[in-house]
Image (cartoon, rainbow, N blue to C red; front, side, top):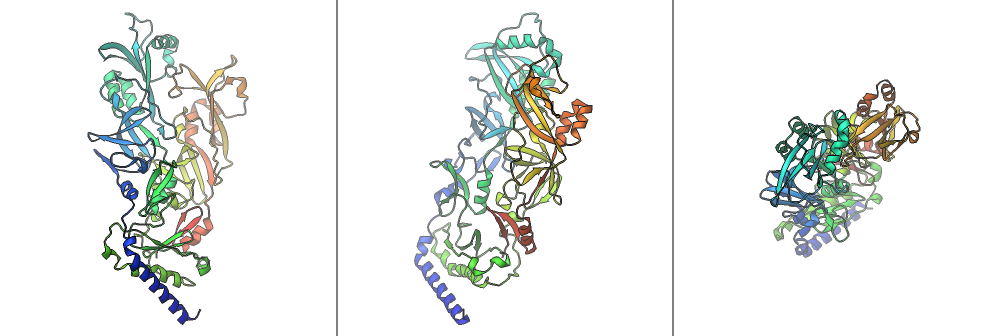
Length: 567
């Protein structure tokens, strides 16, 4: 195109846009969408503040959170109801999706008016690995003056008076199968407790229960229960993080029962077209948002004008002040100048890290420091890396990888070799789990390294012949009150079906040297599980990301690699 013709076309476009904006300014100055404004509020109650999605209540409408995550504030105490039981919320960690809660009806004594088990909706919550379960028995018969059966140290008697009725109760902090010294008396104890009228299962923190076992009493158990136990919630942040990154507020459409991204102009399914509720014009180039304050540095071959798709987006103002539009035509000018000058032109502008800080951040936790693409988590939203690389950091500084609904401790990470040593979090320092799931590693980005050997754990085993192998261990099986739950570990090819009838099984790999150690000493199973197993991973679009970084950009991921470069 001739330069004069180009300049004339450019001026003509600017005149049309300025005229259009001045005529329609009142319409663009409309108020911000009410749902966006409402979901921008957070919950504050007592010493807990800044609680947002997936929670709602206490000033946040139900469309600002997910069903099952309603919070109430009563006398500066934050409460949540789960499966008909009300809990005091003692602490919330949004980054690790962690709740510390305590049963509201057991804060003063062990005698509530209504007996309700501590149960969870498994689609919304799960117990943390340091949770221990306690069985409370109510309306029990009195013990004889000289009971033939000793009362275990992990049990204690208490008395209740409810509705002017007095009755006896007992609690057990462990299953009888975990107390081998009482094995001869286990049938008698089970028979006695079986005559109690009611039983309730509660949850507590393991360290608090250890104090109760050292000094058993009803008062000490109440004190331990008041300190609560841990929960992880299961809201899908892979949808929420891109929404927040685009300037939106996460929410839920109660009509379609789907995620909704509430934006300054209106709701969208995933992300906002307008990145912030300000007077600005936004230009979208393919899947990349450019504005007067920021742009994306595309690879040189993608900067040809035929690859660019321009879309002007008018974002509503937070106020309806007409004066706010006095500079709007100039704001429109900057992205148009960029588009018209981008053809065959390379920017040498200075990066502005304050404009798009999210993917500039790195993930650090424990021994892992300064992780970037492909990893996400912590200060790095999900759009800063591909799915499958979400990391979390526990309160005690342990990095974990979340994959296939299982959590893995990261024992070691080698970014040069793209290898990791992982250990199942629920089996770390613990051979008993409530998650009977296999380590499938279904993601094509991960594969087990050849220096692993498979390990099988079988739970709820019932012998089918007199022979008893050496690989037995015992578990309480969580909420199930099973007097003797036999479990068995298999690390060689043995036809276990000839030995046991099995209730549940879990397969997980281990390092190649672990079976040899187990052959020598069968008691090292816990240590073998803690050593973990080795995994190789593949970084998607690694070469393109390297090219992006060489150009000064930051790698992100929205269905495909995007290169984020600040203008």
